[in-house]
Length: 328
Image (tube, rainbow, N blue to C red; front, side, top):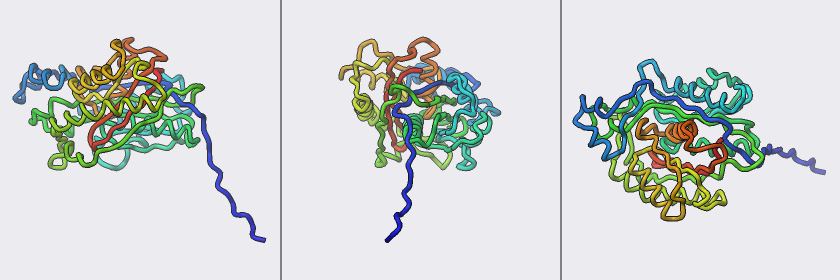
């Protein structure tokens, strides 16, 4: 008689997850449009008209990408009412690490006190936080993690040609973080994600060191393709647009943010839909922009615990992702 072969046992996790806490950190320096106009051919009016930015936050020389991630992550863990030892996974979404190794996640986990956890970086550029949030939720639901810390952080200071007026006006430095854990009821909807690799060259590195984007091409893509992704995320969560209390899209450009909101209202979103406009004073912080905006909106009282919030990230890759979450 042939002996029965051993069978692999799979883990299972909780049915539901939610965001338990938020935190953020910004570059120490406030750089206004007037400041930039002193060194490049631009003006406050020109910048506001094209991207809606009044000021952005840039890092001091001693303020590192990992350091901002540590600050935001520590705040999120504290906001969740947890000890670092209760976190067993750290996902660090970024596209601006100085080099590919060592990764940001392991350094950040060690500094925060997450000593026995999985730690890895994820690069989906400006969609990175939504990708990481979806991954964290599924890891917990699949039983591979109990609680996860998701960080989106960028330090563009070293990746911008400060003589390139088309791109120098856009970017900022910062980090945002969220703790994800089990929940009695669904608090994070299914992630809807994808890519458009045929447009990869519209956002790229110039000369291997400076971020560059073809502004008009990216604008056309974002204003036509991203609202449908947001609609799909709402549908995947079993909701309608009228159920959404707040919209937090990646803070790429105020005109893009407003175009997405206008299209969603035309499809059924409420007129009182609260829309994140964090870019006005933080600039485009790529993977950090959604969690920073979430944290700032909650602190300002624009959103409250239990509000239903639609997130949608999009950018280099080209990559995109969205999901519905409940505000912690």
